[in-house]
Length: 260
Figure 1 (cartoon, rainbow, N blue to C red):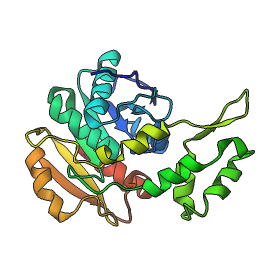
Figure 2 (figure 1 turned 120 degrees about the horizontal axis):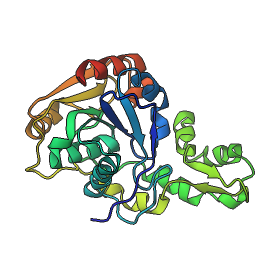
Figure 3 (figure 1 turned 135 degrees about the horizontal axis):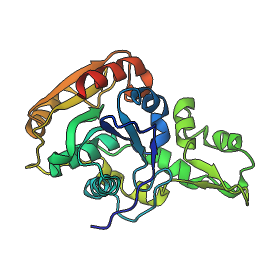
């Protein structure tokens, strides 16, 4: 399987246990800046840009086997034999896939607000809105926000989408840093369970559920137990899907207590 060489941010290496952070769909390593800096007091922290996101290369293939292979190849290049692995949403499914395929590389697995189950694809409307945005007509990022307002009325989510809009310093032209067409085409794959029925990871596993999120439900617990027999589920209070933003203190507290 072809792999791409992933971009990563590190938060200072001092010979501590390595911890790797994987972002969700339409995110990037920048999503982990606050968490990464705080975790760096206890770990050597690396935040990756997954393929077709952030500063990592674009590729026509976008499914969980490929995403996990990229991370495994990145571990090889960094000379990291075993890590604490943390993933949110799409990054959580990538982390689960890697842990099941290469359990010897994962000291502990932390999955932030996602389950190993299939769900109906989401965000088709938002992807369509991003695709139809006329980038050549933009003078400022504010123009983009205004043009997206009707299709994406939620201010916070609109700002999140626009973290993927950048501007060439020479030409001043705006462009999407994500591989927008491939991601849009891959939505059905990205909302699959991400694991084969037979795959399992017997190592220490923690699922962190946002109190106000429905991505981890009671009905998902049998699937969690089947693939991750040692898993436990903890609830992050006053948090939605983005548990690492919504309640940073409790997220870090839970993670540090677990990832030993």
